[in-house]
Image: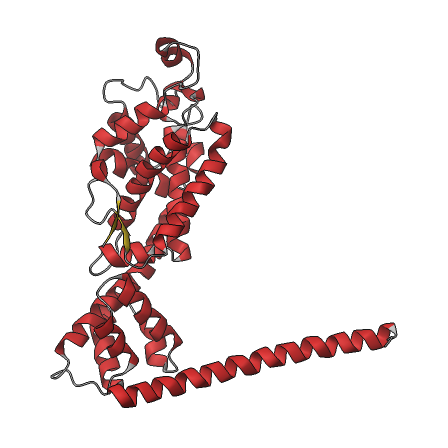
Length: 340
């Protein structure tokens, strides 16, 4: 059957409308069916969904992620808003939830404790995202004494036997900055990049110095080590340590804001995830990327984006396991992925 242009447009419009209505009806049906199923299960088991999650899942990401989803998808405003309460309101919120669900604390003493631990993790993660974002948005200011002090500390940690000749110096290339003044390299990640690099250097100096040393080795160069050290610190075929550190900060940041790090942080932080947990994760990622780079054995630095993308995908894949944690007990010299 042939249609005119106007008729065809009308038929196409009806088809799209029918499809949208069908999808909407299916969604409503599934939603009603799910709520009806939850009602039946509660009547049969005598437990609400929050109780069933806590009793059927061990502490950590496996439990907290399900509690978070249950609260967000609830029809009750109290439960929906619970995930965004301030930390000092967590205990009262749990009491209100227990009251709403008509759960007897005397017969379910552990439930309140379990729910409180989950909610602390949920609101803690939310607050951590805000704190990290604030650091990322704060630009490096060479007129700020605190910023300059952190940068000088980083130099002393990474080059303890080589005094910096001047604040603006080619020496900065020795630790992997691109030019004479590191402030321009912090533009993408702000103070967050500097905080992470300094944390790594201060909390596992031996590992940091080893990674820095390895990154400067001219693996494929015909020049002698002495010639390389003298002339081409800024052109190492390994990679630029500080620049890669800022780049890995960006990777850690993207994992955090996307929610991918919830698996890890809910498994390692018994209560509220903090900035220290995020920095420890950065240390792990930095060391793992270094190992990954060596294994990939790229021809030159132009392959960096390819290696970084592959590394990012491998971390995301591992974080899909709800029992997975990165560096559960932080010792940067001996970091590895573990199954809890």
